[in-house]
Image (cartoon, rainbow, N blue to C red; front, top):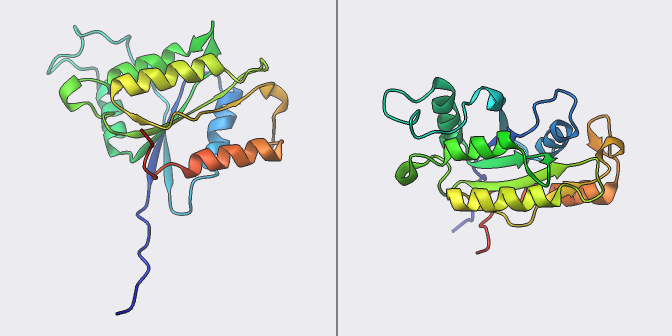
Length: 189
C-alpha cells in the first residue's frame, strides 16, 4: 500500500483590524502577518468596523440586524481562522475590535465566532507592544467562544519597526511567522 501525501486544505483567514487610520502600524502589522500565511491560504479583510453600530440587543433582532453586521457574521462564518489586530487605547483594546467581537458573538447559541481559531497581534509606539490590549482581546475572544491561541504578538516602537511593509527585526519577524504558522493547528487548552 502506497502512502499518498494528503494536500493540506486551503485556509481562508479573516483579518479584523482595530485601527481605522490608513497609515497605521497595526495595518502594516496585519499585512506582515498575511505575508506569512502558508501558500494557498487566502486572506480577507473586514474593513467596515467603523460602519458597525455599537452593539445593542435592540438592533439585533430578526429582520432588523444592520446589513454590515450580517456581512461581518457571514465573513466570520466563512473564515477558517481570524487574525485580530488591535492598537492599544487607554490601556485596552480598540473599541472597533471590541464592537466587532460583540457583533460576531451573537446570537449566542449560533454565533459565527464560536469555535473559530484566532490569533491576536498589536503594534504600538510605546515600548510594551500593546500588551494590555492583546490580553484584553484574548479574553474577549475567549468569552465570545473563539478558539484563541493565548500566545500573542506585539511590537513596540512600531514607527521604526517596519520597512517596506516588513518587520526590520529578523527575530521579531520569525516570532510573527511562528505565531501565524499556528493557525490551523489545534489550540492547546
